[in-house]
Image (cartoon, rainbow, N blue to C red; front, side):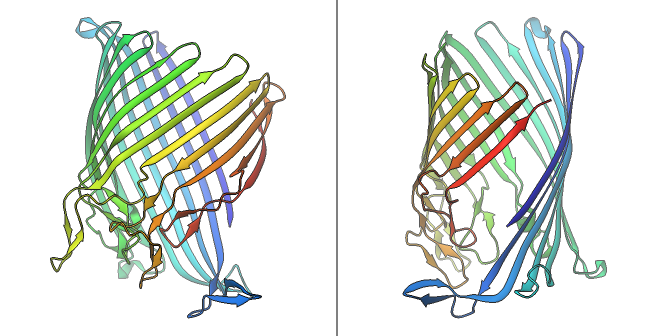
Length: 429
């Protein structure tokens, strides 16, 4: 597994006057990820050696190699004014972003493990243009109301570079979305701010799904109407937040292990609702503790889904794939001068991997795995030390107890990362 990443960004801040400021970000990044692995012998993927079952590797070596590049511009104008007889904070913004991924599959062998036949050479690209505006009406010292709107247009393209242009090696699709929103905050007490909001959101289908087979698959964008209401507060040592949320999806795009052609598909109407809570406390001796948890009792398909022959496919109320009921994190930290350390415990509840909510993990006839992924808990230890204001060193032990668990079944049985040690240095100038 070979990877490399480079990035660059420029930030510009212009204080036009006391009530106007323009912030602009210009950014670029690239990353390559070459994933080489041996194939297994057809019909006999495993063998027994000294009483142990092992993979029976063949002489074939497959390279699943990808390169990503992204660049864009994000510019925001912030204004303060006294229109409508009250204080206002207005923000206008634009964003232009282009992304490209080169996806190659190389068939090699042990003798020449890094060169071979090019079995796939696809370029996926996307360009998006967004405009957004919002105005925060500060009614008084306790109440503020913020309406806003975002308009986004995106274009997706897929090119198969193994085919000539005359044979139709290109497919395109595009869409425009308008997303309004409204937020309200009310300072009920010094340690209690009430807040709520409702807004529209969307997410486009992946290029590989939207343009599969070099044809526009007519996949609708994932759209949702989101509601939230909560209370939060912070004092000298204590901080807390509690939020109730509800997300109504009209056309959620979900992972689809049981589908032989697509890794993601339109799931139709779904409902997600639950609670999020966070609390933190700073002790006087350098120790602090932070905890947060998300509880989603409802993450379900709304309405029955039927197959083409009329048979029931997904019953109403089945749980959406890869949606754990509980996710929780606990962090115990200590700081003394230039030293900072933290011990974190992270828990993810069990998850279904297919819309049928299959429990036992099994491989189907198409080579895809379905079943329920068990809950798992991992522990991480991190530390950093500032040698001077510009230079610091850091280290981390991820998965401290070397927990073994299944993380996903999306493209086979993928285990979670084993215990790993990371060390590094950071210099600021």
